[in-house]
Image 1 (cartoon, helix red, strand yellow):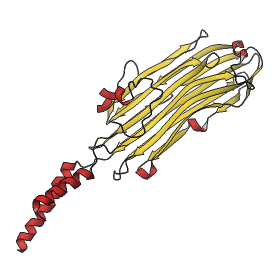
Image 2 (image 1 turned 90 degrees about the vertical axis):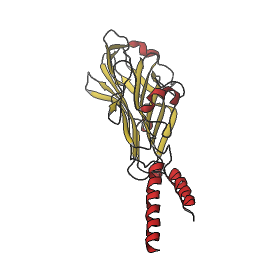
Image 3 (image 1 turned 30 degrees about the vertical axis):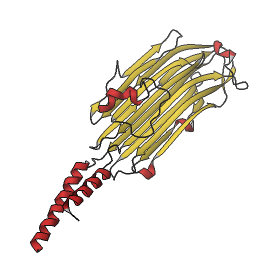
Image 4 (image 1 turned 120 degrees about the vertical axis):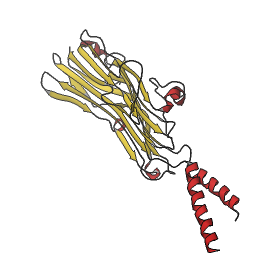
Length: 312
């Protein structure tokens, strides 16, 4: 085979050996579209919620991101706390924090807007970025509460890299209220959950993607010191880790579920604590560029030619 033919074969092999967009991704999105106190029989909004007085409502939201040691930036503070003692509902909205070279086009990646995006889910790597976003608002007694936590990380840079996006207590809520009459309730929860860990099967070892979402609700009778309801739905507490293509996993579900029935006693005071969080982390080992592989091949070829000439 002529040297030119060998060079062409090496160039083609090098280009195919290092895919331009082989990468890793960890996605953790949890959107609570409605959390509402309902009648246990009809599952309709309970007419007795008006007899419950909110005394304090405090909410804290935190979002952050990091890409190769560079902390993500966004509009406004990365952590917000809102506390109300006048019977109104607190709310927090932390603007998304993005780090990485793809942040300039992050809105296009999410189909037009990244801020408080409720429906776009990325199943594989879609750029070089880490993004954290959250908001929480509404009242479970009147109209329903809602909340979003999103922690997405993606790397498709052949040069390698690392990223993480974390939301801790992303929709932390503590509400204290008093019951005006003894009533049975249920909570109706409508959600969209998406969790994915993806490592391109073409990549060698040394890569990892992990993602997780979590949600819990605890209702305590502070008058008696007892727990009335402890709720951690399986669909809202998911996590995956992948180091090879064979370990890739994802979960996506939209549904409405109901809590167990609980009783609020007249004259008693209650505290409601909700924690919602999302986390993702990805690492990508350095992948040789096609040009680097070609240089190695040329070096080996030159050595072979030199050996033949010496022997000749």
